[in-house]
Image (cartoon, rainbow, N blue to C red; front, side):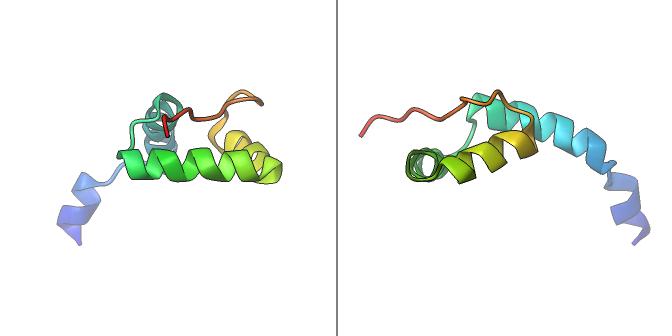
Length: 65
């Protein structure tokens, strides 16, 4: 437990670094395709996803078919 505690970081720090990764689309291609597909199919998902991660309202992922 002590080892886990030493390695831990506050959620706010994790969210900040993760937001950079999410906004840059640094995922394996399958995950990027999944998000792009979900965003194409659901305006609500896109709105909620972008709001959660603090992205611009029209943000989407572009992938080649």
